[in-house]
Length: 119
Image 1 (cartoon, rainbow, N blue to C red):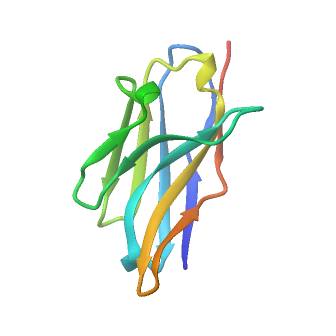
Image 2 (image 1 turned 90 degrees about the vertical axis):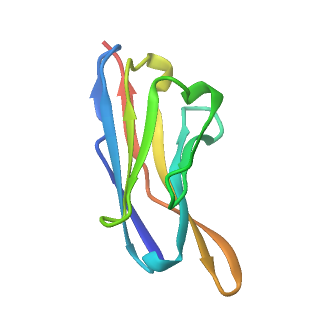
């Protein structure tokens, strides 16, 4: 079992920047990819970005250019840097970890951190 705890959300003005962090604990040896999803009010949860243990990244089209995902394997932490925030970035951002154990792949989720972009 893996626990994911997000931090770094909050209220930001349009054009501002934010860095989200997600610390993993527990059975960290089982973690493969990590990443971020977000869910805006009234919308489905959507992918923002993923990163492998080797540092290969994958971004949603909507996240290319303003979002940067990074990972510190030694600290079991994944980060999401967001620049030039827009009101439409307002959402709950969820940390994600893909786990692999003997019986297959599993998903693990954090509880989410709220990001609100407003003047």
